[in-house]
Image 1 (tube, rainbow, N blue to C red):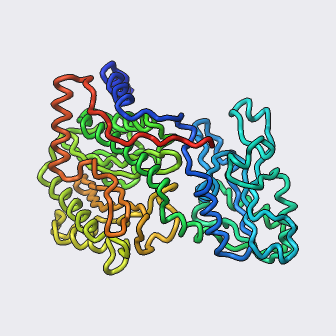
Image 2 (image 1 turned 120 degrees about the vertical axis):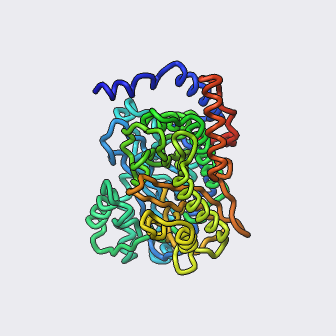
Image 3 (image 1 turned 45 degrees about the horizontal axis):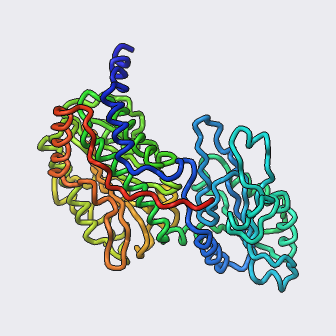
Length: 481
C-alpha cells in the first residue's frame, strides 16, 4: 500500500495538470461534444444501402443495438457497426428493412424500397438519458435520410407479409462478431418466431466487402482519429521517464483524445514496460517503469465512430540499449520492407504476401540468445483493416484496392530478454501505392531518441512548458444528425 500511495503521489501535481491543460488547448478544439458524432451526408448512407440491396433479390433486415448491451455505468453507446455503416444512426432501438425491386410484382403494396423503424418517445427514459429521435418527429425523414420512417412496432407485421412472398431473408447471423453480448442471436431467435417459415442468409460478408473501401468522408474521420492519436503519442514520447507507473503514461494520452473530441478509446490502452512489452494485449498498466526498460505503447482514439490504431516502442530513459536497438532495427527494417511492397493487388498473407516479406527480413537481420533467427518471435499477423472497428470488417486477405485503410505492424517479442518491439502505422491504399497516415509520428530509432531528448531538455528547462501546437486537422462541421 505504501508503494501504491507513493506512485499516486504527484499524478495530479500542478505541473502535470498544467501540462494537460496546455495539451487540451494545443489540440484543435472540437466543434461538437464528444458524444455528438459527426456523420456523413444522408446520400452516402443511401448509396451504401442501394449497393447492398442490389446484390440479393430478397428482403434484408438488420437491427441496431438496444442500449441494453452493457450494464456498466461507464458504458458509452456505440451503435452496431454494420447498422451504423448503412444508416449513420447512433441511437438505441432502431431497425432497417430493405425491400427488393421484385416485391411489387409479387403482391407487396408498399412502394417504399427501404423502411427505417424507430421507437416512440419514452419520457421516463429521456428524462435520464436525453431526447431521442422518434418515428413521428417532425422532419424525421430529412434527419435520418429515409423517405419511410415507421413505428418499430410495425416491423413484425411487415416481415410477416414479406414472409408470405419470400422464402429467404438476409440478416446479420450470429458468429464471431457476436462473441460478447448476444445481440445477433437474440434477434435471430425473435425473427425465427415471427417468420417461422423463412430461411435466413448471412449478409455480413457483403456489408464487410463494402466497408473495406472507404468513402472520402470516412477517410476524413479516420484521419481525425489518427491525428489526435499522434498528438497523444508525441506527448508520451516527450514525457515518458523511469519511475512512472504505466498508467501514468496512458492517462494523458486518453485526455488528449478526449480534449480533441474522441468519444471513447478505440481499445483499452496498452502500455507495457520490460517483460510486459512482450505481452501483446497487455492492459493491466500497473507496473513501475524502470530505468533501462523498453516500453510498448499501443494507444488509439475513436472519433465519430472511426478508430485509430498506432504503436510505438520507446526506451524509458531515452536511449535504446545496443540489444534493444538491434531488435528495434529488425522490426523497423521489416516494416520498411513491407511498406515498400504496399500497392493495389498486394496481400497480407501468402507466399509473396507482406507478412512473408517482413518475416524474411527479420530472419535475415538478427538472432536470439541461442543463435536462432528472430522470425519465430513474430507471432501475429502483419496488419488488418481499420475503420468503424479496430479490426475492421471484410476478408482480411482480400487484395488491396484504392480506398482501403490498413495497419502495418510487425513485432518481435522475446520474453527471455524482456524485450518486445512493435511498430504500427496506419496506411491508406492509393491508386499507385500508399499514403502513410501516421507519417507525422517518428518511427526510426534515431528520430525517436531525438524527440525524447528534446522532451527531456524541455522538462528540465520548464517542467510545465507547453508542447508544440498540434498540427492535426480541425474537425469538419457536423451535420444536424
